[in-house]
Amino acid sequence: MRTSTFRHLVVVTLNLAWTVPALAQPKWGDAALGSRQYDDFERPRACAGCHREFFPQWQMSMMSQAYTHEWDEIEYFELAVPHAEREPKVAGVKAGCNGCHTPIAFLAGDVPPPKPQKRSRANESVSCDVCHTISGRAEGTPFNFSYISSPGKTKYGPREGVESPHHNTKKLELIRQPEFCGNCHNEQSPYGMWVKATQIEYAEGPYPKMGLRCHDCHMPVATGRVASMSGEDLPLHQHLFFGAHVMAKIRGAVELRLVPDRLEATPGEKVKLTLYAFNAKAGHKIPTGSVEDRELWVHVEAVDAKGNRYHLPVDPKGFPGEETTIGSNQPAWFDLGVAQGKADFAGIPRDGVPEGSRIYRMAYLNPKGEMTIMQWYTASFGPDYRIGPLETKTDSYTFKIPGKAPLGPLTVKATLYYRLLVKPVGEYLKVPAEEYEDRVMNEAEARIELVD
Image (cartoon, rainbow, N blue to C red; front, side, top):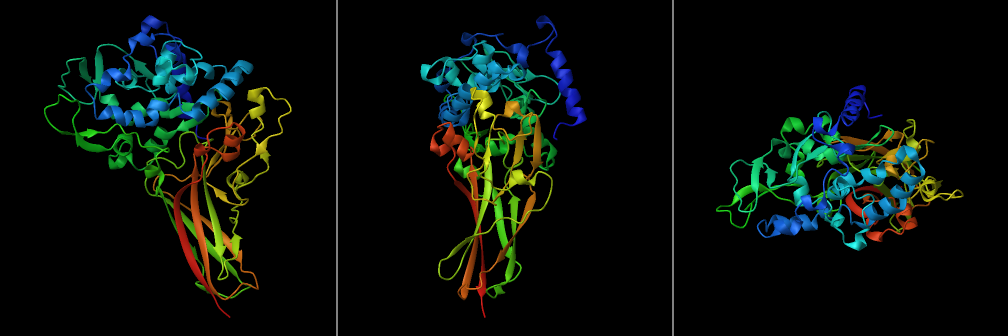
């Protein structure tokens, strides 16, 4: 489990802090629900007139779609809201999801907000004014919208001495720190499980010692102007927010190498191949964030000289719970029926990948110990078989070459695929297909010569 004793104590302390009377301290977390109004926040278009370089970057990012994105809409309205209304333990997610997906709606107490088709201000998602009016955060590990929102004329940023004809500016060191991101990119379920821990994974990894922050990868520095009236070009963190929805970010994030135990073999023999998967690019585990949704899996296939194809399943390692990391299409996801009020729900295929393929995942388990796609219903975890920053995972594939295989080259190829959402779940909930399409992250190939 990821929840250490220290972190558990922090969470208990923070939860107690939420019960302090409103006048004693700024409101944050659950206590901030309904503490503001929509009109306290400026519309994104108000920023576009001066911040002409940043505004279209934000528009193209998932920050601008955190509430309107199709899967997020379906997950919230078809699963989270009805489940919260049926199960008291998870009732808080009806409001709490919006603390990060549409903070101004959460702060305005609009629960649930109008659906995206209504084009309400909830559609602004994580807007410019959301981040640039955060004035601080709660102490301890940041998580579950632990930011302190102070909307108004003052906008907070990373620089001193910035002047604007539209608003006041103030330097906030927090906005430069990974903990700023952790306010939403760390999350605990109502059962105390760290169902999102991207900033925690970063903090526990090697990148902080290198001086690298979340911003350096997801908001890379390029020369530009803060605003249209700025007098000079400066090195600025761009508002691109590269993430899992950007192919350029995930392509090559994991490097592969496939090595056989011999380069020549005869038909009928066994050949053992080792696959090395190295997280060369991410400062957190891969996958991270909504780990229950993601599928990172590898398909290993041999092709002989006549074009015959053979799927190679991974050699099991035998650790407890390993079955959750090896492709299966047996019925699963039974608690979709719990959320939707379908008492006779028989489940759907679990993975939608070739049986026996290795999946780099950490299964989220509900109170019954079943795999769940609903992070708020997570009471425990399966084994963590994701790839940490600068970590290499190794797996072996043993292939008995058919006795009648033709002589000549036997090519073995490993293809690493990434899906934003488990395919059978996406199909069942009628999520747009691009959300669960197979995205090739990387490939590796080895050649064995079949001889007499």
